[in-house]
Length: 207
Image (cartoon, rainbow, N blue to C red; front, side, top):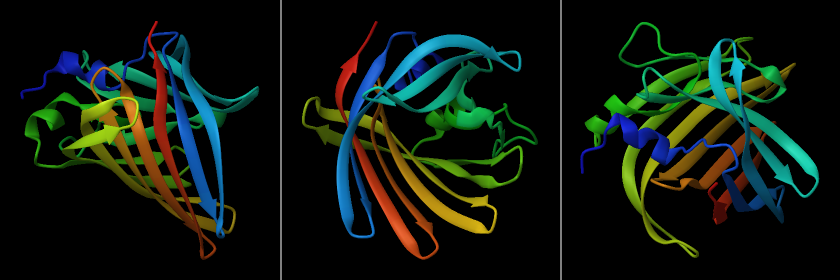
């Protein structure tokens, strides 16, 4: 099935008031715990002249983090220009000398090239974090509350440093049309110890 630029926001909808609730399982040093958290599109605001959606992650009354996302280039790309704590993210598109500001999540040209994978490089402005995001494939995924979904799969790999501490990470994201992010797995290794997580969508509310 051909995908067009207008389909991008369907894979990552950004209307104010939309929310996703996930069941999250975290495993570290042999200990496993679970929580529920909700991601909500709280507001639209300008970040360095780019209109962005601010997404707040919250568990109970606790605000976990805020991330900013934008649709740029006339609706052809969805990017993440800024992460929590005000950190700026820059990116280079695989096919261009310079890309849009931010980690590229979905790209109309890359969708058209599937099943050929497309990779974007990104780095934080302070140089402490960097990595790649790869639009890898389309995959059928069955979720308990949503049945079988046709998903785009993004694979992200990178490193982050803080002082003398260096961590490597891998994330895998499943995006479904009309729903957005429906599942995410990650593995982070630092100081020889690994922490893994799995977040699965259990509830979705559209405005």
